[in-house]
Amino acid sequence: MASDYKYKRVLLKLSGEALMGEAGYGIDPKVVEELAVQIKEIVDDGIELAITVGGGNIFRGLAGSAEGMDRAQADYIGMLATCMNALALQDAFERHGILTRVMSAIEMRQISEPYIRRRAIHHLEKGIVTIFSAGTGNPYFTTDTTAALRACEINAECLIKATKVDGIYDDDPIKNPNAKRFDKISYIEVLSRELHVMDSTATSLCMDNNLPILVFDLMVPGNISRILKGENIGTIVTNDK
Image 1 (cartoon, rainbow, N blue to C red):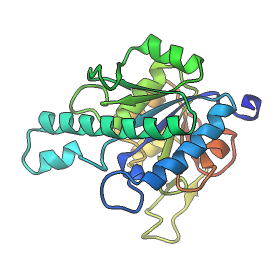
Image 2 (cartoon, one colour):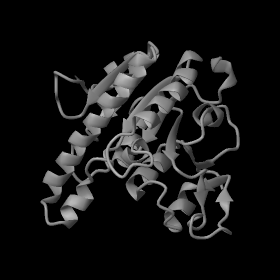
Image 3 (cartoon, rainbow, N blue to C red):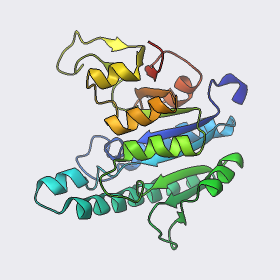
């Protein structure tokens, strides 16, 4: 039930890398299926869910730029990669009976709706999972920044960032077994420590709009529901110290 949850309208930021699972490239159907099961659980409980998806499993604009490609052109290619991921998610969700719409910042009428803020909110109010693709439609902006921007636009109560680790640490937990996980941390500390939870533009946008960021491990089944219910399984970033 929605009353069991601390947050009702949320935006989930999914990296492209999360979708490729253990593979080195592309989309792992098993990961997408497991994600659909988790999404169905919270949507059936009345949670209004929007998703911003990255494209790093297919193409990264920064990587293309580093290889000599024009940065703007490389970023547009990355935006198109996010659309491929969005369609794969939509297919998996609909096979699990989840009503889903894909909205793109770059107009592609045959496969998605154009991003219109009021229409997105209308979808959410009707219980339709809304996937935002193609970033902001502008080069030089990451999908982290897109997630923060869209979360503010749709009046989300929190932004949840799905990762492969169970929160934010003061050091790389893979390299340093003594790294400490934060249960709670402020935006300012994230920025000053350069913890790279999200890029600095996204973190600053969340800070300016007092939008909590919840960082958690997507790979554990049921974690999306748990973190939205307020369980201490990740890290929350807020204005409070």
